[in-house]
Amino acid sequence: VFTHSISGPGTAGTFNFSGLNNSNGTVSVSNIPIGANEYIYQITSLAGCVIADTFDVKIFDTPVITNIITTCSSGSNGSIKATASAINNANFNANDIGIVEYSFDGGNTYVTADSATGLTQGSYDVYVRN
Image 1 (cartoon, rainbow, N blue to C red):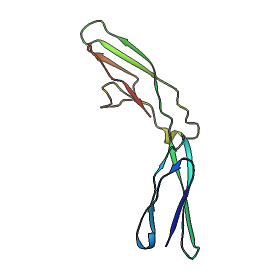
Image 2: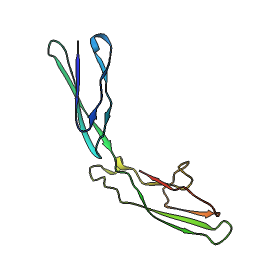
Image 3: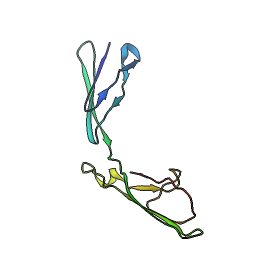
Image 4: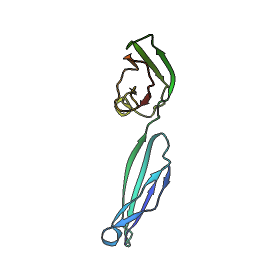
């Protein structure tokens, strides 16, 4: 019979086992903090043989809309400009972070531009993501 353990930040749930003598195990981890987090997954046999592996889980800071500027006079010449909060991803490199994207149609499509133009009068749901 094998035993499994995981160590790292956050809250580990209950292990689910399968395979001969519980040789396979899965576990969910929640409450993982923002940043690059290292985990160690370890399997130990009854004979005391240990296999361990490390892996990283990266949780990115989420941008938040801090300002919206709208203009509209008539027809389809309205515009929206969104400003997103600065995100603190100091532990990541440029390839990890990606870019902030904006949606002006309720999250259906995302673009890198922080403004939308040619809008008609109405309500718009604006979202940002990284």
